[in-house]
Image 1 (cartoon, rainbow, N blue to C red):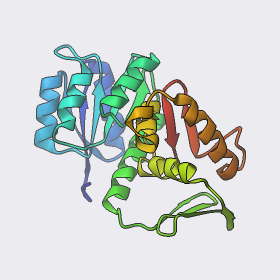
Image 2 (image 1 turned 30 degrees about the vertical axis):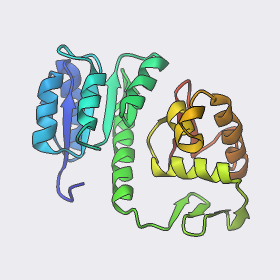
Image 3 (image 1 turned 135 degrees about the horizontal axis):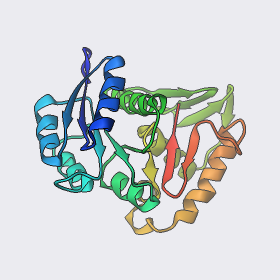
Length: 230
């Protein structure tokens, strides 16, 4: 990610939403390039090499899922979906296609900017992949020693719990669908066993969250998957 001005490509056919998002991002220091169609957006993304792509799914020339697929053939750039499609199946399809996060219209500026910041922080962490420990509030995850402490006290995690935690850590700030988590933790033959996730997520919350009923770090995206936040 550039150390200078952050760059965003906005692919959205609604002029008013484009203006709203552009003004919000520019006020936060972004340079913004706009596109009304998927084809134009792909050209802008390839030309500008932005730090983030913000994409509407309902485009006039092609479906946003196809745009995600094309982008993912050559770039790992963060993709934030903005869409009026609120159905869980649509969110899952976009995330499984390679999007990093999903924001349903209408949305507010604070949430938009918070989602963008979270995705850009993940890019920085990926670039600093040599890190050996992660701190989340009073939690400390020592990746080198494969150990976890909470408030200085050791926490015992089962191998599966630890694997699930590290997968979520790798994608901090990003929504991981049930299918994505199951594939990475249990393997491709187990992608339909969503009850595994409920059981192990409940265990992780009991061990890691101050209040498991109101988690601060291990969040549920209803009907979609899970997200780890700082």
